[in-house]
Amino acid sequence: MPMTLLPASAAAFAPRASPNIVLNTKVDPWLTATLKRINRIKRPLNSVPQHFRCLTETLSSPAAIWTLCSIMLPKAPDSELRKDENPLIEALFNYQLVHIEAYVVHVDMVSQNEVAFKLTPETIESLVEYHKDIYSVDTSASTWNWSEKEVQLKKLQEDFVQAANKFVYRTNALALEGLEEDGAGELLSGGSEEVKSAIMGLFLPLLPPPPRVVDVVRPAPLLPSSTGAENWWQPSMSQAAPPDSWRVLPSSPSTTSSVDSNAGMWANMSLSELQLPSPAPSYSLPYSQPYTTAGYSAPQYYSCPMTCAPLVPSLPLPSLLAQQCSTSAGLGGFGWDRYQEYTTPFATTM
Image (cartoon, rainbow, N blue to C red; front, side):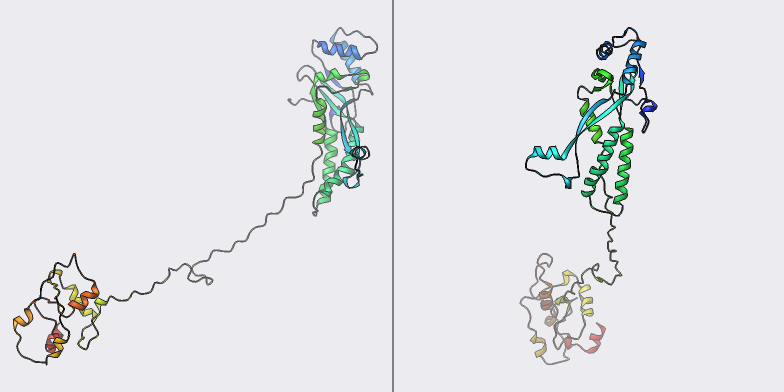
């Protein structure tokens, strides 16, 4: 329902005054029938001014008090209520019926077609006493204690006093059909349930303060220079792989060259020049002969054993290759299997 201006008598703590009534240029037949029904003295109702005068006098009467609804409220706090096995006895001794009474402050049958009610001072006083003596005690007992609880409870009571005095119930103008003699009346068509819900909505709960948000202190991430876990970020050091056996010459008395010299030898050797003997020569043969400076014959050193197949598809393991070819492989037609028989200048040149 759109908001409309209400008279000053509808304001909070304002005294009661004659209602503000606005009628249309043509009075509805139901209003004429209602006024004729409640008037003891028959008076003419043939014009709009006559309806206005009759309705104003009826609603301004001190007895023109409407009962909007009735609410069942406890007589005492929950801790003081009587306990009995019979629920009827508990209801009789522990609860009371409070009638919500009001008077008409505004009637508009032109723009909004509504009627407004304001609570009587007696009803406001009853509600305020119940809120202070019973409702506040129960709601305080049902909440935990904090430092500003009493201040918050007092503010809750003050807010209720303001809300009860400002309360105005507005409904359709057809509610005037419930008008009775002397201007009193009751709401029809389920209006009482709406008023009851609106009145109970004025009783707000006592809300404790929200829990404080505690900042969670998280530990700072460990940097690489941190001393807590020195090596958590470093990759694990793998053990050094053993050197390939084919890079190391056999530890025999005849070994005089280093790994580097052998590495240079293998780097300058092509696959086409590499031939494997079959069967493997005897290592004791070169060392069994005495040292001599006699001339060397070509067949003695150029007699090549059976040539092997190309090494690319069936090349043996490096360890086997080192054992078989380290002292017998021919390089450029020069025999290395008897290198100790050469003089020192040749060894130095190589």
